[in-house]
Image 1: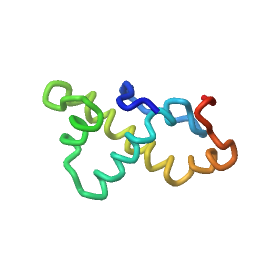
Image 2: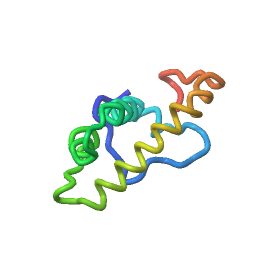
Image 3: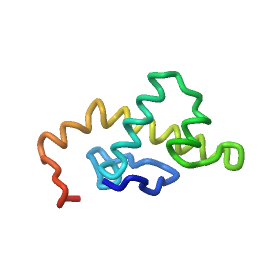
Length: 92
């Protein structure tokens, strides 16, 4: 997994895990941890997503919302793909 993958403006919405999801698994975990800690979304957007909400408020909010939603989906449903397909380092 890349240590600092590029963040898209919107997370995927596919009904299965994507290569983007695999690359951003750590990002998703950080978002879920931040939500559990009741962190301010602006701080999370800046630190986790690398988007300054002061300079790009709409982009930051959209990216934050879509990535958090995808993180929640992956935690609730996406893990089933991992169990079925058994993603390995060589697969995408």
